[in-house]
Image (cartoon, rainbow, N blue to C red; front, top):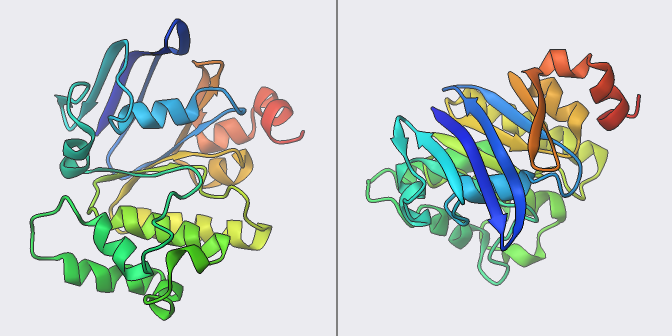
Length: 233
């Protein structure tokens, strides 16, 4: 579904992403793990069209999308749930969700809103509440639900567990699996490497803008170098 080849991204003279290649197949959960500053969020922003690469290709469903504007990328079926949620704090929960469907032209928005509320019952209880008054966990659920309202084929999740309690982290990861089971492919960037690898079909380790290791989630969970660097072992 998504194929990245020799991707290079620069900020001025600084090369943040140094020729990485990876792919995400239809129906998978694939995770990118790495320390702060490894280039994970830069990769996500480039896939979403928010950053333009210096070189390399990004193919989605067989089409090179490097020159496609960000809003058109959403229309094609790639939705990002950004780091730190980026919800519209002064809008209601429901308004946030409806804004998620902004690029859609089909007539199923109302039906998908019902489905999203089924997946996130807590948001239904708070649908008229201002988004900025939600707890951190609820805001994360709202950001994920808003991305789902774009009807994506693939969802890019950037640090969904950031700042959440261990109990909420468990709940968020269960929701990620539930979203995937509805047929949405997931590319997950996550600092909680153990949780991410536990649910991932496959994984890539990003260090200083380069992919240094890849394998199944299970293989990387059992890798000595991954244990030492990311799993506290």
